[in-house]
Length: 514
Image 1 (tube, one colour):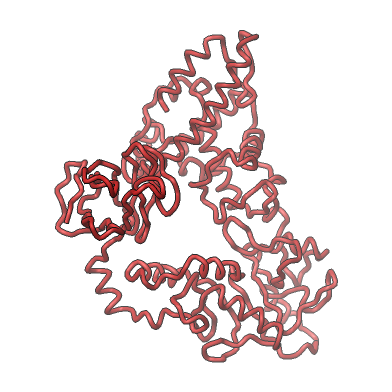
Image 2 (image 1 turned 120 degrees about the vertical axis):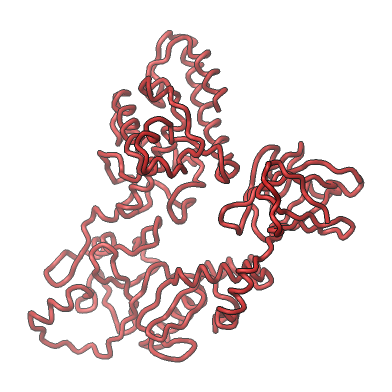
């Protein structure tokens, strides 16, 4: 066995945590024992010499690592090109080709070794046969649980079963035990077990095509309440009955609105804001789920149906769920800058000093988001690539989005608008990931935490941020240079701050810092 050369002073551990297994049996496996290892091995079939070609850093989650390219050529990781000094996250099963295709470069498969604890857990606590969907007979994918029988299925499999059941009968039966299903929702606890099983035995993984098909069929995003009414016959309700049923009533169960009325097989969603019920209806052009968190909200749906709030039916305020472009904001969210109040105050002072409002700054960065000028890797929302200014979101997800945009606003800002004391602060080694900033006010004030980590496993992952910042800054400087050819002082359209004729010297100093 070959061993990679360690780039750190850490003592090697006894246990091999991962291996690089060559696709060509003429070459030896490479064992990884240290947290950070520089790999030196043969890179081309026609050459017997060894070269240093990457550095692999083990992540704290133990199920992935970061590979940084140390060679002069691009490396292909799962068919994605990684250029010199760039990095990519690799997981168990990732394939690494040390150069361009069809040029004779060596190819490795990255494998993470299961620990004794994971082996003992799988053997003693879990039989994988109990983790299989009875519809497709494979390990769950995006597992959902039906109640009251508590049987588990793939989201895509059960979604298709639900669709067909609604077409053929008035109630939905469990595919496994044939009990009437009253409720179905995603099971996040079993989803973690599903991932652990795949890690322990990669042979159980499905093909990419199968997963894509399941994802396309999956329709269960938030908990669904399946109607269990057996009779459409109405009866008189007493005031006490009305009070008891207020929380879970659906206006369209009793009255037709917008040309639709619920029947015995109608599936219902429960609103996360008001607790009221609404029918789950696909392909009607009205968003019923927040794309940022997959939770259900009823405001947009009932507005489209012309239903107003009454004493018997709870309805959301329109402000709880509306498109991003229609929202306004007057204060910096408490989530901004990882809840660091000192950094929030600095951002607020910068915006005020530049003569702008928070709404103006957020609107500018939402426009950049629409133009896809921002790297969305760290956006704390589900389906981040699908988010646009026209996307309806809940208030909580909107605050998360604004916090994300204010982070980009700060790190792409040249230091001129910053207050003098704050501009001279050194960056914290751990950047926004620093935990000390939350309980040590002195540290939070002394160091800048609106920056990328330069220590720990976060550093290599965030090289994408570096490239994005460089692109934004280069575009900004190019515009400034064009304007300063004819004017000694100009207003930059990006940030509305004065730029003097000596801006070229300032920009060179700032670019050196990045």
